[in-house]
Amino acid sequence: MKVTIAGAGSVGLSIARELLSHDHQVVLIEKDPAAIKIPSVPEADWILADACELSALHAAKVDECDVVVAATGDDKVNLVLALLAKSEFGVTRVVGRVNNPKNEWLFDDTWGVDVAVSTPRIMTALVEEAVSVGDLVRLFTFGQSGAGMVEITLPTDSPLAGRAVGSMSWPTGTVLVGIIRDQHPFAPVDDDTIEARDELLFVADSEGESALRELLRN
Image 1 (cartoon, rainbow, N blue to C red):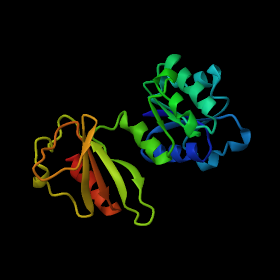
Image 2: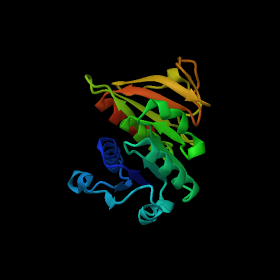
Image 3: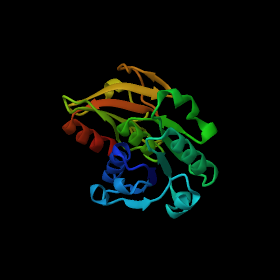
């Protein structure tokens, strides 16, 4: 997956590192020369330009991107970029960072924003959601324990579909804490049946997450 990120501050760099660690291709656009720190994310392609300029977006080949992330510290810039990405380049998924909560109402499809968020980890998960059906995605990490909240959207051919929650033997160190079905979350009980396209939410430690990843691949 190819992702263009505007803004190479702490948020943009955090998202870039996460995506690169998941083997995605990343292009970073930054207009401040002082913020161009290529050694910090050497695997990314860097462009020194204003992300609101069409020439910069052409240089980044935004028309070939799967996702654009507007992650600058300026809400006006993020909105303009989102609108250009959607209307001029037809980008399928645009994720916009909201810096000022008072501006949140602007970040909708009118401005080309598909998802408005602010936390780097959550932004990464939402970006990957577009193409990660069947893959385990870490949403966030609990600071003290190191355990995390992870999610998987079951593909239509998943062998788990049709099985009761109580019949599953989840790996040690993992707990199924929620299911989202048709945009409605609920706490699963043993008699509930897992269905294709369900979003399963787990709390898992690092070892449990690895074991869960292996289980869900089979």
